[in-house]
Every structure is written in structure tokens, then in C-alpha cells.
Image 1 (cartoon, rainbow over the protein chains, first blue to last red):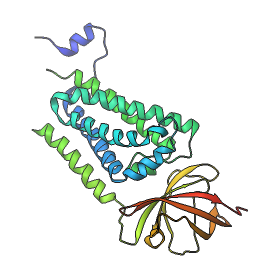
Image 2: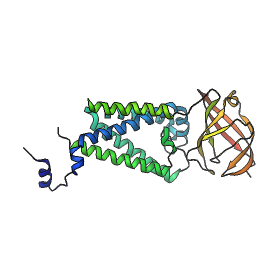
Image 3: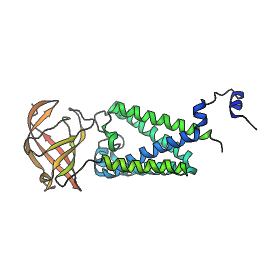
Image 4: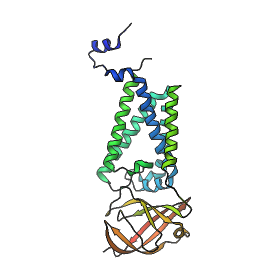
Length: 158
Length: 122
């Protein structure tokens, strides 16, 4: 019978702190639930304010010409990722997708922050109240959360 | 099963939170998307029933879009641009201006207005 801690130490890898190790699956579930909450909430708000979203996106650099397509794709992608996180079999794919989505948002947000900081956010709901720098911190937190989720998921016993 | 419960709770919470945080709208209020190039705070004296509700991330001096509340009385004719005399506040400094707004669309309590000209900014 193998001892995971010992095996990690033997491989020269830093084992996870005890708290994370013992509650791995619970933390993965909580991270998944947080992403589900975030994506479902923002997707619903985007759909509710679809016309507003479309008009504001028209003003955005790079994606302005495809505002209608992007306005549909954004909430759709968020709902698909939320669904993947909901189903246990697709949870890991969901976490990777959440990481990709949040990374893409963060990169674009950084671009907005540099080039067009005066345009409003179209993220939906209460998140629109955040300033761009606050938004950047919020996104980076979720990117980090996705990375932690993926790492913990992979270390779960099969 | 417990795993499903947590995810299900997240979905229910998201839907509930959305319903809870939705701005309340009565038949008189509509949300207007303001496509202008000035100010983060606008107060229109005439007509008096314009209300600014939220203007996130907007500053004066550049192109932006903001969300306003406006009385339905002013969106009865979406095909005609409206000229309004008003008082415009830019960073709390009152200025008088007349401007033309074109209503791009009016749909289910939401309207999009375009500020096409701003005069007498000083």
C-alpha cells in the first residue's frame, strides 16, 4: 500500500498542506460551485440586458464589429462551462474551460484597462459596479481559484 | 449526491441573487443606454422626469456608454430625434447645453439613445 505523503517526499515534490490534502474533494466542489454561481449569475444578467450588452460591445475595441455574435457567445459559453462544472464526469474539463474563459476575460480586461479605461463593463449584474482595477483583481482571484481547483482535482484519489 | 447538492445550491443562489438584485422597474421607468461623449453625471432640468440611476465606470471627456433611467413619456416616438434643453453637470460644474438624442431602439422597458450633438458646453 502506498503512502501518498511519503511518495511525494520521495519524489522530491512538496506535498500539499494537511488542510488541503484532507479536504481536497470538498474544496474542489466549493471552487466548482463558486464558478457555477459566477457564470450562471453573469450569464443570466447578460441575457436579461442583451440589447444593452450588444450596444455597449459595439464600442469595445477588437470585438466591436462582432458585437451581436459576442453578445450571444459570452452568456452561452458561461452557461456551457457552468453545466460542465455541474456534471462530475466533465468537472475537470469544466475547470480547464473556466480557467481559459477567466484568463481570456482577464487578458481582454487588461487590454481595456490600458487602451479604453472609460468604457463600462458588460460583465453583468453587480460586477458592473466594480472599477477596472477592482475587476482585474477579481478576475485574477478566479484564475488562481481555477488553477487550485485543477491541481486539487488531479490529486484526488480515483 | 452531496456534490450535486452544492452545485445545485450554486445554481439556485445565482438565480435567486439575480432576481433579488434586478433593478425594480415600473411602467414609467425604462433603462436607457446613453451613447454620448461627455460627463459621468447628467441632470436634465427640462423635462424634469429624467433620472440618473447608475453610471458605472464613466468619466467625462471621452466616448462611453452609460445606463440611465428615463420616463416613458419621452420615448413615445422612437423614430424622431428629440431636442432637449437641459442642464448638464460635468464633474459637479453646471453647464447649459442643448443636445439632440436619437432613440435607436425601444424595447421592453429599455431604450438606447444616441447623443449626436452637444452644444454650448461652456
